[in-house]
Length: 179
Image (cartoon, rainbow, N blue to C red):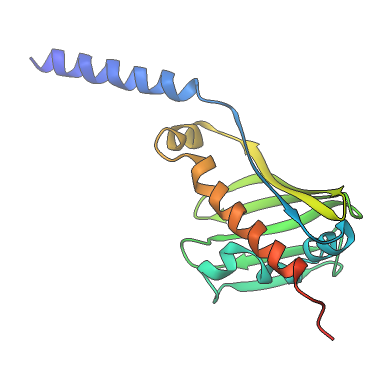
C-alpha cells in the first residue's frame, strides 16, 4: 500500500513539474487608453518619476511608502526606489530610454515580496488632437513564477492596476493647467 501511495505521489509530482515546465517562458501585460491631451503633455507626466505618485495605483495602496529619487529629474538615468508595505513591496524603477513624445522604457528591479527584473514601457501616439498611451510590462518566467502562474494570472493581477493608473494619468493630463 505504501508503495502505491509513493508511486502516485511521484507521478503527481512529475506531472506537476512537466505542466509547470510547459508554461510560457515570458509574459507581457499591456493596457491602452486615449487621452485628450498632446503627446508632449502626457509624456512629461510619465518622464518625471516624481509625478508618478499622482497617478500610480500603488501610491494609493500604500500612501506611506518611502520614495527616493536619484539621477536627473527626468529622462534616461532617472530612478525611483520605493519601500512599502507587503502589497507594494520594494524595488527600483529606472528610465533606460526616453524618446520625447514617443517612448519611455523602464527597468524594474523588484526586491520584495519577490526578486525579479522586468521591463516596462509607455508609448505615446498622436491620434487627431489626442494621445493613445500604452503601458506595458514584460519579463521572463522562471520555474517558480511559472508555477505561481498556474494559480495566479499575471494579466488579471496587473492589468486592472494598469487600467487604474492610465485612468489616473488621463485625469491628470486632461485637467486644466494650474496657474
